[in-house]
Length: 117
Length: 114
Figure 1 (cartoon, one colour):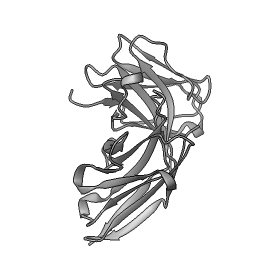
Figure 2: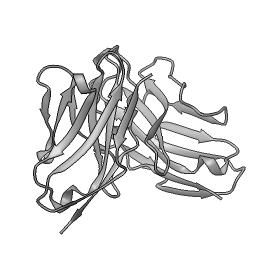
Figure 3: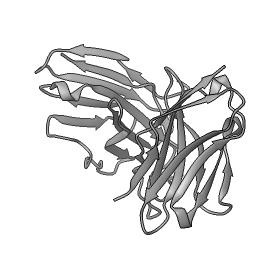
């Protein structure tokens, strides 16, 4: 597709359940990011993938959160044993370059809104 | 660590009036600076950015921002608001040292009154 695609757009789950959120970045973009947007707060960095390098997981809030990127393209963010404080919009973004060639232009998807009851 | 402060979570302006959104950063070395906009039901998109060169940068839809090192600021302006400018605006920074992580402010929601 032309843009970053995320699914599902909305997810309602019960506390304690696991959820998977999917991101399909723009074709050819080597860098992929996950951010979390909570009500009234800015975007919180979660994780960054660049090519075949080891991901930067420094923003993941707990070990219940994990992410992978298969084949340098699609990424899945998994939240295990969800808690109510995990409720937020999870945003995926990609960029043409990362690291030294980074120019700051991230292309964002529309996000996956997660509600944990 | 980079820190970004946006003054005012909500701004309401009349159509045709000046739009001014404030952003201040905290770092001893000026970072790269960005403004992103999020229209209703859409993903964030880059409005403009400052990396080097001219301190007054122009973006899409008539917006511009000026980097002022002495004030550690990067305020966003538009001379005349249009109804289509209603959106949430985010200021973001990243260090110059090849850091790829954008740090975002809390955002400012702009409403435009007819």
